[in-house]
Amino acid sequence: MSKIACITGASSGFGKACAEKFASHRYDLIITGRREEKLNELKSELEKKFGVRIKVLAFDIRNKKSTIDAVNNLDNSWKKIQLLINNAGLALGRDYFDEADLEDWDTMIDTNVKGLLYITKALLPNLIDAGSAHIINIGSTAGKEVYEKGNTYCASKFAVGALSEAMRIDLLRHGIKVTVIHPGAAETEFSLVRFKGDASKAKAVYDGIKALSANDVADTIYYCTTLPAHVCINELVLTCTQQANSFYFYKG
Image 1 (cartoon, rainbow, N blue to C red):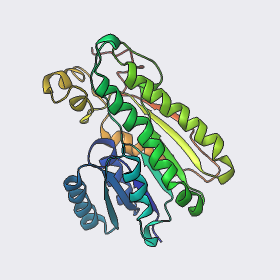
Image 2 (image 1 turned 90 degrees about the vertical axis):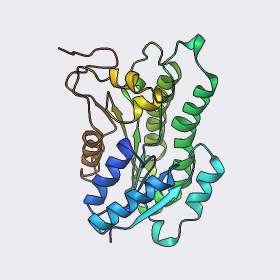
Image 3 (image 1 turned 90 degrees about the horizontal axis):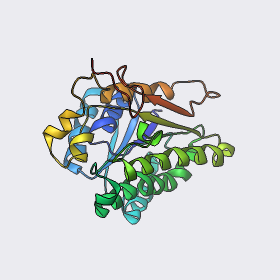
Image 4 (image 1 turned 180 degrees about the vertical axis):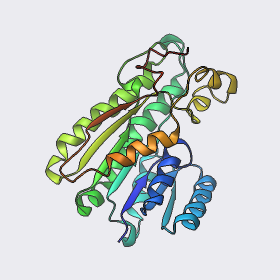
């Protein structure tokens, strides 16, 4: 029987790359996100290419009721979930604390922190029942060091790190592995979303560096799931060679 993985924020970026990676290794997938059309396109592509089952759940992870209802409405063939990849997240704005938009703050906290909590809590009975389950949370180097104009985004990713540690402790008795992955600069839609569609600002972030790709991150996530049952990578920081941390880049 194929393993089942649930991947949040699967319509693009790390989430889409993870869907492609795990489907290629014969996982059946539950893919979630707000953009139903993109999720359905991905479903068709992966089913045709790899012959796996794909379940689309289109909802806004910020909405507690929608998240819980989506999980509760899964039929029995989808309930034994062995892997949860909490990828849904975003940055909005790059502003000084005193100039930031409160709506941006709400969106980041509601998505990056509360959404992660909602989906994980909703799926825990399934993960516990599956036995030997694994939760992978996507953090950021922004959750390791605070940088100028990062304020609430950094805070949300620090929270992901703290929650990952809390899950690891509290779920120890269920034998659930918990891993947090902290990627550095990665060339996806991330910066375009952060700068609200300003392509020139988004592109400038990566000028002069060979940034991580979504596939680089997906490969690393997959590796973490292939280790023996008694081995768990608790935390992993991943950057391109030209990046040391949130502050230091060498652009040559």
